[in-house]
Image 1 (spheres, one colour):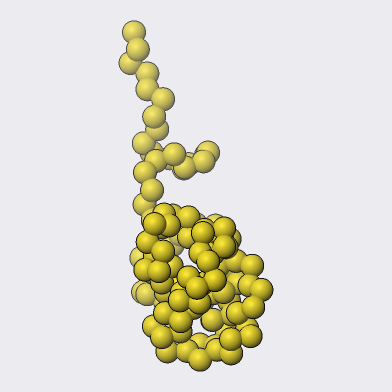
Image 2 (image 1 turned 45 degrees about the vertical axis):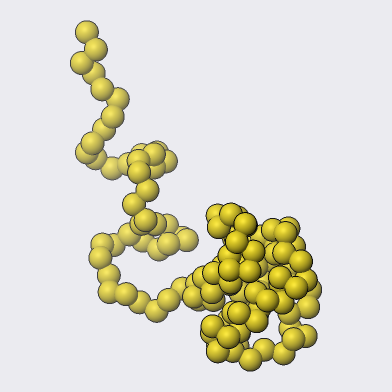
Length: 121
């Protein structure tokens, strides 16, 4: 009696996506999904964020990688002042940047650190 299925395999999506993640985004954050495109310029700050992320994981490997987000702070992640200085030093070396130390004072989040570093690229 139960030949009816509730899964639709054709037609436009009318609700939130519930299928497997494909790595594609659409809408305001990711732009319209318009098929394959040639690699464009990197997202501003993406390379810097990845350098910061790698450095945090190198300095404090016990931090779960998924907790390193632009909204997180290194203090909240458990980084002490020496850890934070080591992270900044590694990123500066990796990206071959020179930034005055005073610019790193009072940065509340990893995103703020990324923005500060990105301004010097």
